[in-house]
Amino acid sequence: MPTLDPVTPLTHLGAFKGYGIELEYMIVDRDSLAAEPLADRLLVDAAGQVVNEIEHGELAWSNELVAHVVELKTNGPADGLGGLAEHFHADVCAINQALSGHGACLLPTAMHPLFDPLLETVLWPYGQNEIYAAYDRIFGCKGHGWSNLQSMHINLPFANDEEFTRLHAGIRVVLPLIPALSASSPLEQGKASAWLDNRLRYYRDNQRRVPSISGQVIPEPVSSIEDYHRQILAPMYKAIAPLDPDEILADDWLNSRAAIARFERQTIEIRIIDLQECPAADLAIAELVVALVRAFYDEKLADFASQQAMETSTLADCLFLAAERGSKAVIEHAGYLELLGIDKPMTAGQIWQLLLERLTDVSAGSRALLLKLIKRGTLAEAIMAHLGDRPNPDAIKHCYRKLAQCLQDNQLF
Image 1 (cartoon, rainbow, N blue to C red):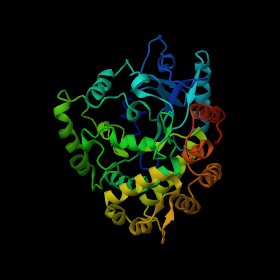
Image 2 (image 1 turned 120 degrees about the vertical axis):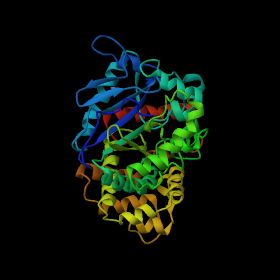
Image 3 (image 1 turned 90 degrees about the vertical axis):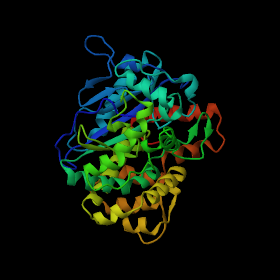
């Protein structure tokens, strides 16, 4: 879904000179885990008015589409990713304390495992609700792809056309591996999904009424900002126009590819990273993803022309394979493997292990956590190993209460 109230613009910052991180959490009853539409109890300004966003020191808290989700994000550009996990964890604890009086807490992972969107969705009635109403009218927002998908977004800045083009190329070829590191949505309404990253399946399909909005999810290669507008944004605006005559949705956030340009703040936003069980895991994954993007940006793994030459359909095939099978997905495409500096088929987990060894821009603390995470497999794989193929509701609730405790304690599952 769109980011309507962005973090403070990173305008004019050069590539890798600032970072914006956003983490989304569902609010649930502490015992039953039923979704609770309590975001308005958290987002109250000094005058006592419910607002879309409040500042909270280093972070900001906000809401966008549904009343049972709250988003935590950097309050302006962060100089680096180090230390952010601690800020996010502190605010998670503060929100849990505020929710405790309502018998509620925050729940991690990218999809609530028992949520029924037809019965439990409550749209956010405040602020920019004309935008939410337009989405609901055109696409119908009472579905998992709208009201039950929590993610981490990474915003990376660019200062000019050249930086934009290089950054877009590097992000584009990193995207297919991300679900093999971050998948955390293996359950849907109490049943095991066919995909470990079920959220990404909904992300792909929830706006199929207007196919140009998400395209193949992997963005097309572009040669400039002007080319991006021509290839990606213009067709999307033209396609939505008959359904949106007042042009309420005619903005770059309508784009639902895996990474999108946010021109008002001069960033590219990576949008397909499933939320993890704790901020330490989220930020460690962010460090590794950014380090790999930077290696491509600096042409340390493959030159710009080779990155641009990768077919969108090939990258999309690898993306959805990883979304389905997680770290065990076998990447066989020779051209993509060559781009990564690998000479034979490997599982995506093995590829991440190898890349972690080669990339030096990952902090020692995150590196240690990532080694554990890669050895364990994605959070989705860990959840299913814990539950088995046919989990019952009581077992699911017990498991996800443990995950809620991992969030409170900032520890891996």
